[in-house]
Image 1: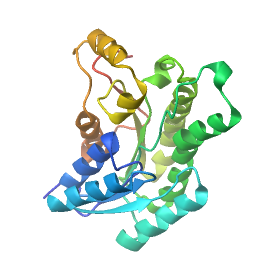
Image 2 (image 1 turned 90 degrees about the vertical axis):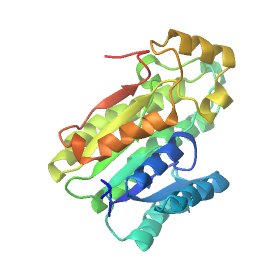
Image 3 (image 1 turned 45 degrees about the vertical axis):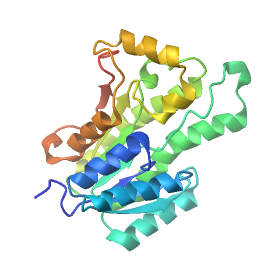
Length: 251
């Protein structure tokens, strides 16, 4: 029997890159997966199709997670499909959007970055926490940028992920007595479209060269850590922000 047989997982931003890898790994372990997306409809449908092809079960649900009404619609569609209980919540939705120096920042850009990366985490957790019981797990996606301030022009992204890191610790304290564990994962350089879009090749090569394992990470390696944190193998682990960066930075 798979370790997540009969369990329900919600993965925000679950259509591509790290989110897709997480959705696939949870499904392989038996979970029924709600694959949330916003603009990546084709990718979400492809992820669901791949899950079904391996004998899993999943649905794709569009929702803008910076909008509380749409968060509630995501919740409603989850309940409609799988009932009023979930076991695993992965807050993966987020984005850098553009690299901007301090002088280039605008209020609208501030709102965009903070809403997509942090507001979404707060209010998705608020919506789904009442559906979670003893032994359930919340995993948030933070970033190495939360520790080191990020690369050039990513100050708001790094700050929003820093907020996720701190909120994770706070929620571990608040939700622990209810039997809900809350942890976060802080990826370093992972080979994804995120870095294809926003990181120059020479910078990626330089960072990989400074990393003790001498390479970029893989989305599947992040997903494997999610599986561990969602499983009964980590029942005494909560409030932790896990570095996964090939040794580039560690406590």
